[in-house]
Length: 167
Image (spheres, rainbow, N blue to C red):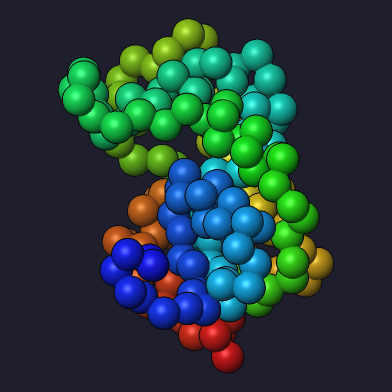
């Protein structure tokens, strides 16, 4: 943002794994973040919630969208989670959470280890509850009829939530 000469403060709108990065940015540079919208985001509580299924889910996330491309950028989720855990506490900012109501689309037919799509669907509402619990009184919008890609399926919800936190 500095290199691009984009002045702050910023309103961070993050989807999926971007939730970890936006939360880390907000906790590292609290004076630069005015508000946040978290769109069906990943949470650092996922390894604990998934328990013995975490290694398989981590493997799935580390290859989703990249397939077998050896040149694709990879995310070290354990390191990212640790960085967020070690960051200063979050200062309160206007925050909204949007969560899916429909199953994840595009899961591969075979998942790593003993992980199933049913496991992910069963645990995801708990992941979203953890995101909502980041701050007291965080509004959560359930994107009725939308899968994980809410910003594609129902962009109006993301726009409305962004306007809410800005106001």
